[in-house]
Image (cartoon, rainbow, N blue to C red; front, side):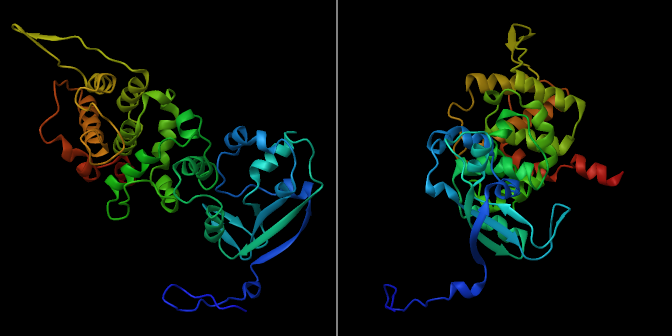
Amino acid sequence: MNTVTRPDGTPVDFRDVKAWGVIDSYWMPYQEFQDLPEVFCQRNTEARLNRARKHLAVLLPEHCIVFVAKLTQDDELQGQRFRAGYRWRIDSNTRALNWSTAGSDVIPKDLFVIELSFAEIDRIQFSYNTFDSMDSVERNQEKLYGILQGPYKFTPTSPKIIKGQILSALNKACCFYFPDLYENLSPKTHELSGQVGAFIEEIKILDEIITDAKAWDQALVCAALMAVRRWGENERLIEGLTLINDGYMNTTMTIEGKTKRKLWDGITQINHEWLNDETFPDKGTNWFKDGGLNNTVSYVLYWLEKWMENKKGEKVSNNYKAIGPDWRKRKTSRDVTALV
């Protein structure tokens, strides 16, 4: 066997992978394959199929090679117990859906299975992730749907959440609330499940509110997540967030002597800024630019706080930029619930 060396001349060892006992292969009848469940963290299969129909319309030999993961020891996921021997499809779920909906010219009678055996569910999720680019935004957006439906057993109805278009907002909210745990400037696949878990109740509430995806950029979603965490399903907060979704504004000027002042409620201030870009002409997800998430999220939280206090205002305070980083110090609805 030829020796393989690194640039510094160090030889690279060969490993007997067959001896690991992790990889097996065999033929599986089509119906048995269809009866296998999708992996618990599967992305939005329907959305994937919409983009893949054309190249899956004609059956090719390459389509008939599939990967399956098998659990070798009992394990638990979000309270659900899985017995040793349980199997999931981990790479071919779009093809499976395409075949089951007559999207291909023919259906294979048998599939060639490469089976990977692991003792822990976490290792199976890691295996699933290896089939995708680990930090691709598009893939992570699709994975958000799978994480919500799988581990957290929640099926969103908001188009924005279905498409996973809240990743930067969720990541920033986690960084604000848990700075010792999360610090990455952009969402990372290996952190996504934990971040969803940290804000799963808030995501469920926003799912009912965010009906107009275009009305919500990442700053607004982030601030909404943080506001719901603080006030929960407070009636006035839900009203305010719904008004953001609807683009509500009451820009009636307040007359004080000969002076006209923009003494507006907090929701009007938010929607007016997001319509006119006066304070932040160049909004984006970069944390540190003037129109980045550090400043814009704090701006929204400032006005949401005024809305909750039923106070009107003309401009933000000089120290508003500290609101986002300090928000976690405020008592949350979860803290209140824990005391009941």
